[in-house]
Image 1 (cartoon, rainbow, N blue to C red):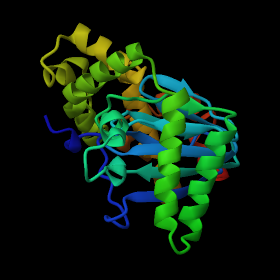
Image 2: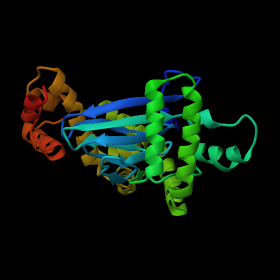
Image 3: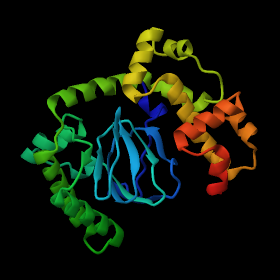
Amino acid sequence: MDKSAALREPMPMPDPSFPVKLHQCRANEIGSTLFPHHWHEHMEFMYFMSGTATIECGSTSIQPQVGDLIVVNSNELHYGISTSSDLFYYVMIVDISLLHSYSVDAVETKFITPISQNRILFQNRISQDENITECIVSLIREMLDRELGYELSIKSHLYRLLSLLVRKYVAAATDLDQYRLRLRDLERLAPVFRHIDEYYPEKLTVQQLADQTGLSRFHFSRLFKQLTDKSLVEYINLIRINKSEELLRNTRMNISEIALATGFNDIYYFSRTFRKLKNVSPTQWRNFYP
């Protein structure tokens, strides 16, 4: 099954010979989508400078505070929304192949290969760890300044970061087993995620989507809930509301037209759902965040 066709996000690097990239991310809209549900092979580190957000890693909901580091393991489903009007955070995406050794040594066999193969996983949230903070701040500074030899410094800091994570923040064995099961189940439901993302304006039923997985309606619904921490209806509504954000910002379509374009036949249901997820009405969203 081809995960790349579903929510698996391609991750091109500015410099393929040095596969690390840094984004500076801001949000001034409470309830705005930071990134939709997706996963990718690379590790991702989010370091929060101001404001608050809700980040979902797998089915775990995290509310990071200033100074927190969120670690997204390879192939881990994740999603984020802003919960403040002054959110600022850095995202560093790293292809662990950068740290592979060209010869078989203890570092490669004990750590780098297991990490790249998801045999070592890390806890998602790290708070109030001075050594981790110093390391991630140094990585960010090197990526921004790009002084001579920054590649050497970045690799050294990445090794340092992984060593700190290995010593204190390795996920429990039970978490690793659950992660492997989740990864298998993500692969099984990949066509469903793809179908929802493509056909969200249309009527989507449990039976229609369950048929794509070969599961009964009951087992499909239970598995979907386990993976996303949402019922199918809740997930579809979230996708539709996220799609409506762009239409509210970038088009002159009225609220009724946007509701219909995103799969809501009832404008009042659309408005109630939007308010529930974003804490403001669609009209307020458009007026506040033109």
